[in-house]
Length: 396
Image: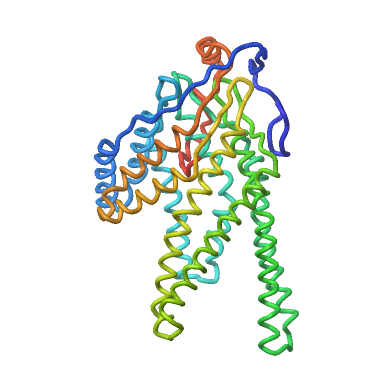
């Protein structure tokens, strides 16, 4: 198995080699859930979460995950979800404890409000890894459990560069403070603006690299039937993705600027027109960016990640298209607003169907034979007790 970074394992799990002569069998992915079915689950979950002051939330999440996974068919067989909601409840209490601790310290000892945040930052990679272990271990297909084999050291190494922005902020503040001593107000403002701009540019330049590290660790740890996946996307693919996202953002900004110029020309340059135009442009920006930029990011990132995730026997593919996702997002938003939020479960089902059915899986060799052989030695059946204890699901 190819090595992609310093935190990926280099060993190949047993029985993962496959003669290249064996044919590939495509498995379509279908979603059979319906909005009306999920609406009944959603409304009960919502009411019980409100009545219990959010304590029912992990149980509601377990029901939601079970519904979506049981209605996701790979080939002709559905995924299974076996998560214990009580273990998820323990994880929820842990996160609730962090929130209460931060509130208490912020109100009664503001000088130490950074301590709970620092503790959460230190524990976050371990909690994230535990959530991946819990989610994968409790997912099955055709009676075989999945698992996540990324190690704890790799979780900390892939997230360590996220502390770079903290160092940059400290450097900018120190540099700006020393450079503006004795300077007038205008010069001080210019130095702070320049330092802040450099910091933003540095963070923007580092973001694709950080995203690549995290996704290589995450997609390099999935295991099913002794097949450990890897992410073949290079660093250039992530920078290309980021540049395209920046291009779409600039196009959206140019569109808003053009609309503003047209509206200003029609309404005139009076101060009253400016007062009316500003809220109009803000509302338009609130609609354009989420309805255009977010579907673009979602579709391109899904295709980038799952189109390059594979093992020796398993190969994933994703052909999620931007325009259908954008149109579906606009439809969902409109109907959610029109129904005062009651269309939300229908929107979730429609979006899940579009995203899942844009994906496919190809498996080499006789699926029944290698699944049967893998069942006896699949570590995902029992799993790691430490990750099972936390049971926190932060999403994959």
